[in-house]
Image (cartoon, rainbow, N blue to C red; front, top):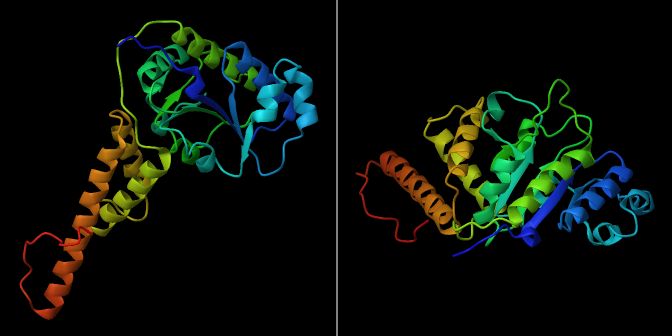
Length: 261
């Protein structure tokens, strides 16, 4: 099956942008590259008039159709695959792609899934906690000075996405699990692993970040997430049953939970 990236399934997410004018410049860059879906995470309403100044008349539709969210989780909730942008490296940011490699990898993903590309605030970028909402990371390589204007960064990423939309590709990926289902699975998995003392409660995210990176390499479909959550529920049921049987002096049996809970 011949396949190209579906730009209609790509959403640019601006997390706490500081200046409305930057939102306008981003809208113009998006329109240049054929992308029109814009989400803005902002606790306060966006000054549309200031944003429209730099969006120009051509990109005004992107501004008028953009959606505002109170938090990042809500902004990416409808996406099956989330990419975070970062200029910093560290233990939690080891596996980072270039925009070109990221764009090519998204070709099969975008056919059946919404894709969100998240850009952080102009002054600090995305934190480690915010990056936990992402399946993978992308960075724009620079020489000595790594700080790039927000609109310039969006333009570079969108340019590579547009290039990928003009190339042929034969790989296909089915519909992936949406972000809320993944977050629920990670929460359930963390709770179970803490209860059986596989990970310690004083720093559970250290190991959970490894699980996130592991599962992001697959990536998981909705049915596979349900299987993992079902295993966690069964482990929880049986652990509680063994505990209760031990308190009452009964021998625990190995029958399956009849309710599957």
